[in-house]
Image 1: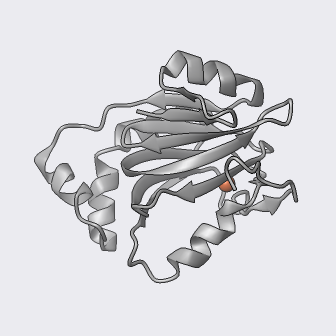
Image 2: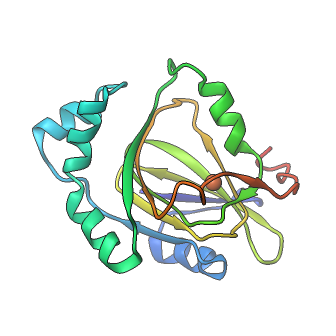
Image 3: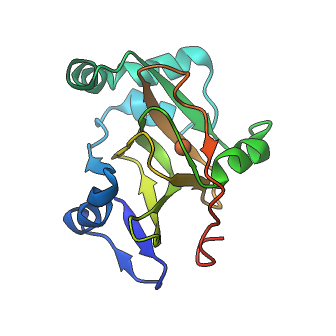
Length: 181
Ligand SMILES: [Fe+2]
């Protein structure tokens, strides 16, 4: 379950409380239980997955994708699998560590592992949100945010797209709060 960290070092764990903090910037957080299935559990516990294994994982989440297609117009999905031994992991982390926006929503369903999204609130204050298996997050287009891995450097997440073009980082040049830098 997600945990929100404030710059004053306080934490929030209740979903309604977290949602209240993130609502003014349009970020939506939900929790969708991961289906209980032995094949899925085996695949998710494997650090690296080949393309056919990734397809197998995505198959378990097709009902979610169909719903997003119908309600939000999403066209494609893929599975991102990050692990400490992935070639280029440092460069990838660096790319999303600075505050940026996208021209399209950034939608992620975390299915294993964990990661941290950071957000700039309307008053300029910043927060970080730890997300883990079962957390679904929708970061709206134009919202200033960043992403970083935890020390485990391990996450698997379904990404949903309306177009790939809308999902490049546009850096805003804003500095990270010293609490999160
Ligand atoms: Fe992003």
